[in-house]
Amino acid sequence: MARTGFRAILDLESLKQPFLGIRHYPAGGYEFRNGHSTKFPSIPVEEGETDIEAAYRVASERRTAGREAFGDGTSVVSAQAAVDAWGQGILALHRLRNLNKRACAEGASTPLESPSAEDVNELDLVLRLNIAQALLKLKQYECAVSHCDAALEINPRNVKALWRKAKAVWGLRCPGEALQALEDFLSVDPGNPAARAMLKEIEAEEQKRKAKRVGPGAALRTAPRPSQAPAANDAAEAMGASRATEPSETAKAPMWSCCRRKPKAT
Image (cartoon, rainbow, N blue to C red; front, side, top):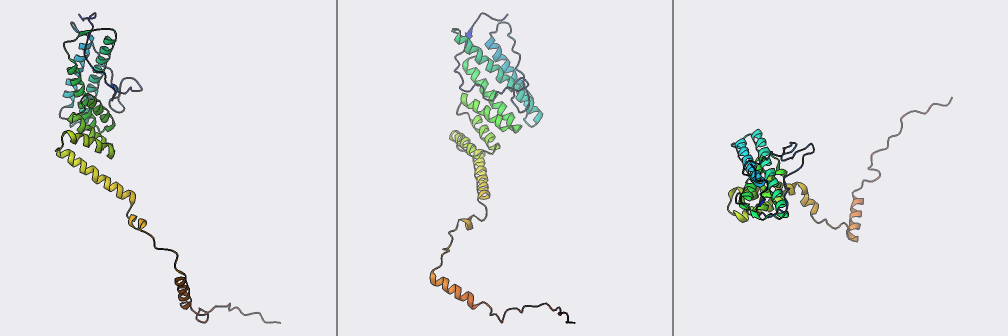
């Protein structure tokens, strides 16, 4: 039977943004991928378990289910199933954190031996990284960024989280944020060739955008214009030259008159 009267706690620090990547779906459930509802997982408390231990077990099971569904990552359908499974794992850990917070508020002081706080954070990190990878496969970049940010809250220097965030932000074609994400990544892994290649791609794209905004006639438009106020003598000379080149009255084309004869007087 479950240890219902046993209140054990974890030494878990509260997350600043615990709902990153967790959105309520209008028709019920939670939206981890666009337009799809993921149900909250069932978390039965088995014999000998606390409610916190049960939540951790279910989160671990959903991690395994998502990994099996994702496979080699080449199928869109597999990526969708993996997002749903890993999303349920994240929800189970969200419940774990809430249970732990409530137990602490109620004065529980008995430490829980397993899982440890490090185990919970590590599983949360893995689930966030995995779901971000699947969302990149689905080209749902905005959702992927949220889960990368959640992973970086747990571990600000995690290489996978930094790299996947850079890919997701560039997928949204936000060059400024992508450059910042790449700088953060390169501060941890400065020699990464893929990051260097993406950096060149962003810079080239920015040059194209700049040229398109400015246009091909920018040099002519921005060149200084000559003075439009000629000197008095120049004006006089110009007037004289124009008169000299004008044809005389006799040289002008003849004016044609009507050739209709007037009627004779009777």
